[in-house]
Every structure is written in structure tokens, then in C-alpha cells.
Length: 214
Image (tube, helix red, strand yellow):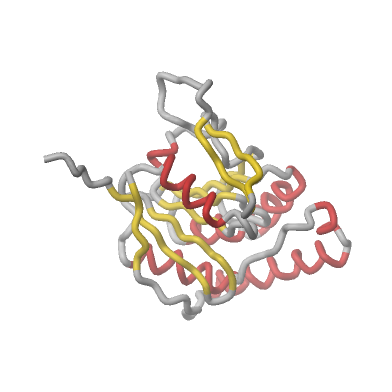
């Protein structure tokens, strides 16, 4: 398997009132998070630019790029991307390893009346190992792991290859790793929206690798 990058220009589109209200409340809670210096416990946590994230998710939805409605946010933090996906009609799940961030995301979405699920687990599934590399983090397959079943996140009732749309805002030094993870675990046709920074959003699609044998 392999993936391709799709053409996309990162812009902020007009936002529905519900989305605007959600962003306002999410920003307020994020400001509280920093004012209380809670970010010192998670020094690498930096929120994305929400209007741009919503626009990108709305774009792939309007273009009917995802083949279904199963959505996962890798490293969901306050759950903003997960909330947007839910508002766009997806069965949305956020994966976040830090319990305190999961609690904040669940409280935010519950207070805003948005239905989504959060899993307090690593987005690196069983069968893969993360390690430190010169440029950041990387992953490799765990040769000691074997299973007769498709890879699935603990707590989800679908396999990873059944997820139609992924969203990630990777930490510095993990951009390549997240693309390798997408290539390794996503099913054919799956879409990845990757937020790299302000006005820097890329969209990828998993494709079947061409067979050079004739």
C-alpha cells in the first residue's frame, strides 16, 4: 500500500454559528488551561487553529473523499478536531493518552451537546514500536507480535482499516512518523488530514500500491 497527497489550499471558510460558539468556548477553556499553568504538565501541547481545521474537514466531506463516516483524531487534546467531525456527521472518536486532557475534552463536548467518544490510549497500536530517532520519533513493526485478527484500538468496535477519516496535528519531529503510521495501518481509500501549522494543512489518501510484476 501507499498514499498520495491531494491538492488543497488551507483557508478558513464561513463558520456555522454552532461551530463559532464551540470555538469561542474551546478557546476560553484553553486560555484557562494556560493561565493555570496546567500546560507545564504537557509542555508539548499546542492547540491547532480551529477555523482552519474545520474548513479542511468540511472540504474533504463536501468532496466526498472519505468512503464512510468513521473518524479518528490521533492525539485529540481538547477534542476540537473530534468535535468538528461529529458536527459534520461522522462517528467521531478521539485518541489521547493523557487522562487530564481526555477529561477536559469530554467535559467540553458534553457541555456543548456534541456526541463523540474519547479513548485514553496510545494511537500507536499493538504490533508497532515507537522509538527515538535523530529527527524525532519513528515507528517500526514489532516482529515479536502476531495476531490472527486485523489491528484494532482497544475500546473501539471497528478495525483500524475501517476508519475512513483521520486527523492529526503531529508534534515537531513526528510528521514523518505519522505518515508512516497512516501508511501502515489505514485501509485503502482512507483520508488523513494533517495540520502542520498556520495555513499549512495537507490531505493524504491511502491507495493500493502498484504491482510492478507483469
